[in-house]
Length: 450
Ligand SMILES: [Zn+2]
Image 1 (cartoon, helix red, strand yellow):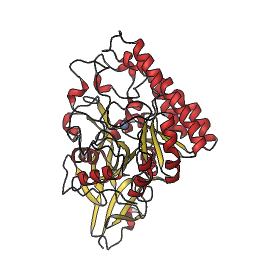
Image 2 (cartoon, protein in one colour; image 1 turned 45 degrees about the vertical axis):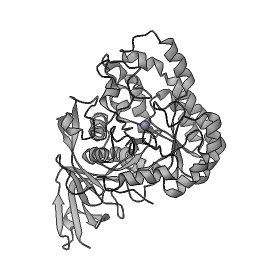
Image 3 (cartoon, helix red, strand yellow; image 1 turned 60 degrees about the vertical axis):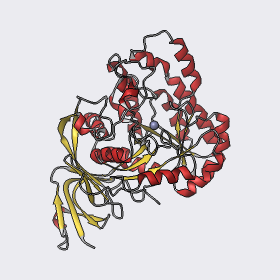
Image 4 (cartoon, helix red, strand yellow; image 1 turned 90 degrees about the horizontal axis):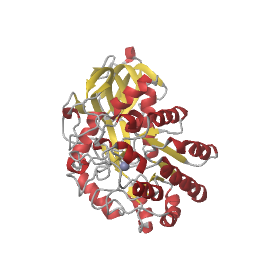
């Protein structure tokens, strides 16, 4: 098998950033050697100089909406945006596609929809809904990475939320699979009451929407989940944590040895409620973007390790559903698409705070790979791993424009912003899948199977 080398003065490994040549044999990394130790048998050497080589990013929270709602996004467009953003593996959420991924035949329909259309690898989460406990173990056997449920209406009928009682019926099955349960942790009670109180308020103001989804709704959900975790001993993962108020209870649970992990998203780490303009519904997501002070507390939790990963929650919809013209935060669809810009968004904020590229690789590659059960082949530059790389120039700036988004609908709250760091190229299992705005070759992405 031919041997190739990828050289850089900044190769990002779990042990740190160092000059190295990454030797690639077929689609895997053989090993790393010093820049002056590249073996003579290497047939093709690419030197990226001062541009960094990071492990291909893994996004454990993506809404591809395919099959059934590919007019919202779809495998072709989501994986194209992923390749442009430095991602090499996406894990797809089980809702907003038709059918929702709540049984094995729906998983098979998803596999059919993905065939031959992906520029990066993908994997599926299975859904837990009100009435499918009998599908949980079959889904695990068929290859899902774990499960996702909602404790509140997910914004679209067809994927039901679960009550505590319904969750209790599912938990023994989930625990038996050993796979994680990812939970959208907001309880509806507080939110319904707050929304009713605000019925006559001005819903073109972001503050009105923010007040309708108080931190206490997240906190109450997390408290309930931690109690269930203690009782049923399943792997609990809190998706898109926004409320920093919940962190002390999470830290206490972790210190007692409960198997709980937490993610947050680039938008909670970069945007702040105070700066969201009137009527700017592109900033709507759930749970909401909160204050600047809250944002700093989330950064603190990344620093101390309570939050172990950053996922995008890439959740696009047709622009009409964002009600941009009306600017009404109550009626607009909640969701922010960011696959193509998440790495520069994170690097912009992280570099200001003194973090290194190794931290970004831990949050955006290794951490999500562990959650999705792919950590033996994805998320690290190390011998035996898939040759998934992103070539990243950490020093150059760019302005976010529509032609850099690459997903289906070119809307984004980041448009016009200057971000730091540019994705120059992305390699999937040794093959170039993105370079300087081009997507060379056929779509070779495939489902990750362990
Ligand atoms: Zn989501």
